[in-house]
Every structure is written in structure tokens, then in C-alpha cells.
Length: 112
Length: 116
Image 1 (cartoon, chains in turn green, purple):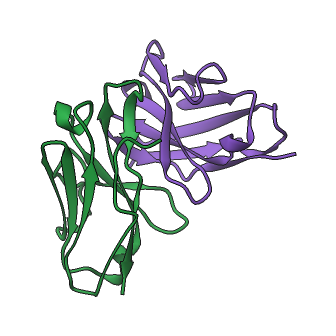
Image 2: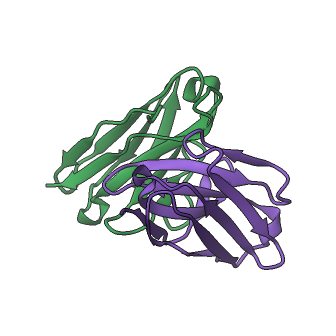
């Protein structure tokens, strides 16, 4: 049902860089709407990690960065740490029948 | 710092109803849109409704339209979700969130389980 597609899982060793993709369409990301990213640690509520494509709220480490191009966006985690093991979701706005706020399918990041 | 606390979840039979509440603090409540988002067990996030600061603008996802009703009381700094005609696939953790073009703050969630 999600209109934004993410890989189900990505993994990396501590210190490595991993990238999570978020693929949309012309009715959401491609229409120029911003992409936002959330981190959900096990058993907790999501929290905003990146807003407005590439902005970090205060308190979010600089190893998290976002980008957007065309109908897709990406979240990069540099210098992967054990505490980064979590689920990550992208989110945008959509003008199609799916309506309004749409989330990605979610990606589980595993630190090896 | 903004804080949101949900309550009202529980076990309900198919076809039943619940009223979920979300108490806000730490910001001027009436200045912000508020949303409800849910997450079924082991599944992803699904936006289901939002309401403007005045309560005059309301939208719902198709999956809940006609069954769920969002409302707010700015004198109590609270937003509500009346959930009716519940089905098994409504089983989820329901989160309230302060909304802009993204969801800036989230509550801890309240679990709704629909089962006979």
C-alpha cells in the first residue's frame, strides 16, 4: 500500500557507510515535495532524523545526511554505529488518490 | 520541549469502538496541525488523519474514512480519535504527532487490539 519504496534491509560493519534509497513517483517526490526520514529504535516511537530533504534537527548526529533527486531520495549513515541499528522510514506528501502524507515501506538497518 | 501522551487503547471486539486521546504540552497547541498515524504489528507506518489548529480542516486516509473521526479541544490541549466499526486489520499502535510537512514530535503510542 506504501507508495514510497525502500529496500527491506541494509547492513554494514561498524564504521562503514550505508545508504537507504526511497523511490517515489511524479505525484510525490517527483512533484517537488520534500522528503523526511524517521528512525524507529526497537520498541519505541519514530523520531524525525532528517526533515526537508537534508536538514537535521538539533541533537541528530552529523553522520546522518539526506539527499533528493528526481523521484528518489536517499539517507546516508556514515561511520555506522551499533546504536544505529533500527528501522528507517522516508515520508513525503502525495497528490494522488493515496492522499496527503505517505510513508516508505521501511528499511531495517543491521550493524554486523 | 513538546510532549505528547496517548491513551485509550485496549482490546475490543470486531465492530466495537474506542476513543483515543492525546494530551499535548510544551508548545502552543492551537498553532499546530495534529495527526494520527498507526503501525500494525511488525508492519510499517500509515498516516490516517489530520486536523488543523482550529479544527476546521480535517482529512482522512481512505482506509479509515467513514469509520474514524478526529477532533480536538484546544482548551484541553488534546486531540482525539474516535474509532468505530473496528476490524481485525485496525489492530495497531496508534501514534499522535505534531504535524507540519512532516511529523515533528510523536507520542509513545497506544495499542488497539481488535479480536474476538
